[in-house]
Image (cartoon, rainbow, N blue to C red; front, side):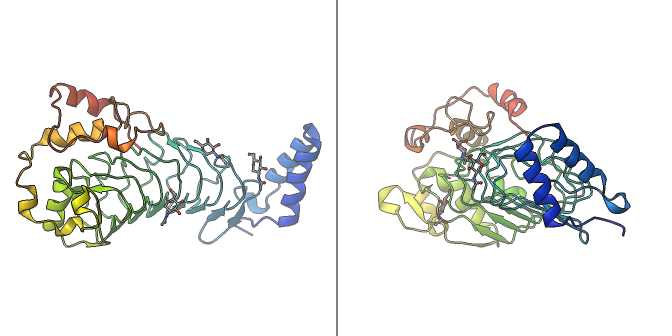
Length: 310
Ligand SMILES: *[C@@H]1O[C@H](CO)[C@@H](O)[C@H](O)[C@H]1NC(C)=O
Ligand SMILES: *[C@@H]1O[C@H](CO)[C@@H](O)[C@H](O)[C@H]1NC(C)=O
Ligand SMILES: *[C@@H]1O[C@H](CO)[C@@H](O)[C@H](O)[C@H]1NC(C)=O
C-alpha cells in the first residue's frame, strides 16, 4: 500500500486511552511505535484524527482540540479542523500543499502573523463562527484563494490592505460581524469577486458609508442586502440604495480618512496591531461623521510597518 494509511479507529482509541490512563513512559512508547509503524512509510496521521489517501485529507473535526494537532502530514491537501475549541493559530502550522482549510466553529481569537503565508495552493479558507475573533491582519501570498469565509465572527475592522493579492477570490463572506464601516476600500482589491455577503453587521449609513457605497456603484458583484443600523432615520435602509445627496454634508473623501478610521477603530492605535485583543466598544470608538480627527501624516508609514501580516 502506498500513500496514506487510514488508521483503524480501535488502534487509535487504544493508543489514546493508554496515553490518558497510564500517562507515563510506556504509553508514550506505544504511541511512538504506532506512529512509526505505518505501512509503506506513509506519513502518520495525528492521534484522534482520520486520514484519507485521495485526495490527501486529514480530518480532525469535532474532537475538542484546543490547538491544531501536531504532526499534520506535510502533503495534506484538505484539512478539516472545524468544531473544536482551537483558540490560537500559529505561523508554520499549515503546509504549502493545503487546498482546503476548514477552521470554522472553533474559538480562535488570535492568529499569528504569517499563519496563512506561503499557501499558494489554498482555495478555500473557512474561519467562520469563531465568536471571539475580532481582528484580522493582512492576507498575503494566497494567489489561488477562491473562497474566504469570515462570517459569524466579531470582526470590527478590516485592514485596508487585508485582501490585496487575492486576485482569484470569487466568494467573500463577512456577514454577522461587528463591522460599522469598511474604510480604505478593502474590497477594491478583489478583481474576481462575484458573491459578497455583508448582512447582519451594524453598518453606519452616515459619511462612513461612502467608500462602500461608492464601491457598489462601480461594481457588478452579487451581494446580500446591506441594511443600515444607524443613524436612526436610516435604520433598515439598504446601504447600496443611498443617494448621492445623502452624502452632500460629508467632507470630501481623501486618503487619510481611511487610514485614520482603520486605526481608530481599534482604539488608541492597538486594534489592528495586536491580534485577538478586544477592540473597543463601537459607539464610543467609532469616529463621528462630522468630526473625524486629523492625525499627522507622518504616522501613516509607521503604522503600515507595525501592522500584522497574516
Ligand atoms: C474538552 O476539553 C476540555 C479541556 O481542554 C475539558 O475540560 C472538557 O471536558 C472537554 N470536553 C469534552 C466534551 O470532551
Ligand atoms: C474561548 O476563548 C475565550 C477568549 O479567548 C476564552 O475566555 C474561553 O475560555 C475559550 N473557551 C474555550 C471553551 O476554550
Ligand atoms: C452570528 O454569529 C454568532 C457568533 O459570532 C452566532 O452565535 C450567531 O448565532 C450568529 N447569528 C446568525 C443569525 O447567524
